[in-house]
Image (cartoon, rainbow, N blue to C red; front, side, top):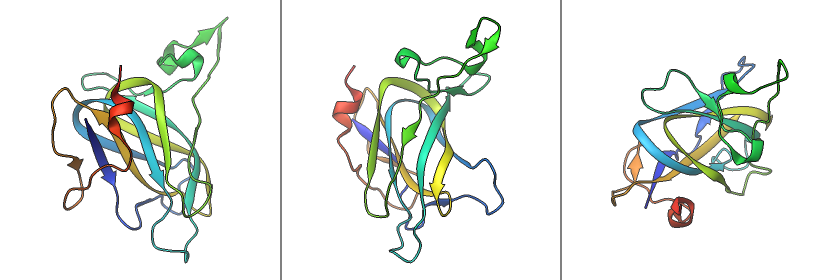
Length: 166
């Protein structure tokens, strides 16, 4: 089991000042089985209290035309374009709870695993400014070193084994 460590830097990802719909997208280079995400607040101490409070997730597998939303509807993942009820669009997007303070790390495991190359976290609410550090948790059939887009390798914070059980 492996973890895909994405944005472990001290400051992490920060949205532009004027961004009205902030989101961060991760390209995992190839399709991966994703079992959850871990989020942290901004990591440069108590000078800047900034973090994402809630978010939803979109994803796209390699070769697919568009992004899908991770949906709450019976833990079924469906494309937003296909969710019509009696001629009107009804959405039951899964809202994930992120950070509530500047100290804690938050794990959000997915009840239904997804296969994706691209994972996008859309910020819904935040404290002071949309800022986060994150890990994408997943697994492969073979054991590999942790995948990391930053310098060096970092082991995952949480056990991937429980997230990858089918």
